[in-house]
Structures are given as C-alpha cells and as structure tokens.
Length: 278
Ligand code: ATR
Image (cartoon, rainbow, N blue to C red):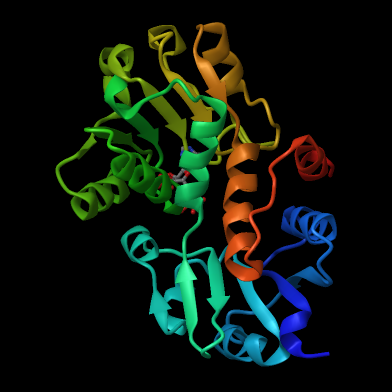
C-alpha cells in the first residue's frame, strides 16, 4: 500500500493523554470509510524538530500541534499561513504532496464557524466585542472577530503587560481595558468571549459583573470541560445567547481534517457525543 492511501495523522504535544482529538478524527475517518488512524504522540521538546521532519516520511498527512509546541512549530515548517503568523502560533501542520510542510491555525476559523453555526443571528455590525485573556487562544479569537468585521475588540487580561503586547500587535481596532472598567463598558458589548482557562474543572470560576451584560450579547467560552461553565450559566440567566467551547473544538478539528484528507466532515450530534465522552 502506498503511504498516501493510508490516512495517517495525529497530535503531538506534552502531555497529550487528555486530548479528545483522536476520538473525533477516528470517528470521522470511520464515518467516511477512510482507512487510517489518528494517534496521540507525547514527545519531548528536544525531539520536536526531528519528529516534525520525520513524520511525513512515515506517511503522515499532517499533525495537530498542542501545548507546549504551538509557537515553536512556526520555526520548523517551510511555510507559515498569514493567520498563524499573526496569531504567533499554529495548531495544524500539513505535509503537502510536493514535500513542503505548511502550518496554519484553525482555532481562528473554528471559533467563528462555531459562532455562525450556533448564533446565526449575530452580526459583526451589532457592536463591539470583549475578549477576556491575552494568550494564544485570545489571539485566535481576536483575529477571527477582526476579519469578520467587528469594528472594535476590547481586551482585558490578568497580566496587563501581556495584553499590551497583544494590543500593539493587532493595532488600533484592539483596545486594552482594565478589569475594573468592565462595569462601565459591558452593557455596550455585543459579544463577550472567555479565552482563559478560568472555569475549567479544577480552576476558579471567572467572575465578571454579570448583571451588566447586555441581553442582546452573544457570550462564548473556549472552556469545554465542563461544557456548561459557570460563566455561560450566569450569562444565560442574564438573557444572553450562549455558545459553548465544544463546538469550537469540533470546528477547528473539522478544518484540520479537511486539510489532510480533503473531506469536510459533518459536525453532527454523533461527534458531539463522542467528543463529550471522557
Ligand atoms: P492559551 O494558548 O490556551 O491561550 P495561555 O497562552 O497560557 O494559553 O493563556 C492563558 C490565558 O488565561 C492568559 O490570558 C492568562 O492570563 P495571564 O496572561 O495573566 O497569565 C489567563 N489565565 C490563566 N489562569 C488565570 C487565572 N487564574 N486568573 C486569571 N487569568 C488566568
């Protein structure tokens, strides 16, 4: 069998044991009658450069890259997409037939495609957005909101300096605010997104002045364990439309799958059930 008839992909990171990606991608491979496999591979930082070079020789179409290699990977591929370059991190590597490796960040499209799916009435013209956090996930979300046409994105973060760097990178459509200013600006925010790990199992909940949320705002969380976070529950109580993080996970996965295997997988109830199953 030629390498390219066997559909091989995976995720490299450290640790990767908790990753839900193998379940998701193997489900789609099976669903589409494709032979192959998606596997989790835990590797050391020392071995990373060699692993990235060797995988295509072993027949891999590509890999997802996760913590702590999302930034490092940019230095070890031939081509970096504009999206990944702006975000400063990639989560997907594609090994092209011509022998070059290409890195992209599918979190960005994953976020906005999930919003389009789950909150179809939301429109970028509705008003400004607030992004809480300033890490890689925040950059992916901000990029997608700016590309979608949101005029102004406000950002707040525990460590102000990190948010300052982010604001400098994105330019004047991104505005930095202090946490204490949320009370004043929340009523005008039409999209509010948590990109921090707050609210995840084992982490404290994210507390914002929930009573200041505009009921017309769409509120989203990138945390998906639990699927309904305290943050989303409180926003829902305020009358906001809420979009959970599991959809973003599935949408970024679907885009990677399409890159490698040239098939757009369906994001249906079956894959939601599989992704939730721990
Ligand atoms: P990712 O790539 O998933 O975005 P990251 O780059 O580590 O991960 O970013 C994590 C984000 O969650 C940051 O905005 C971080 O705030 P700091 O920049 O101040 O570290 C935020 N975060 C994590 N734990 C937090 C906590 N306990 N309280 C407030 N913010 C927290």
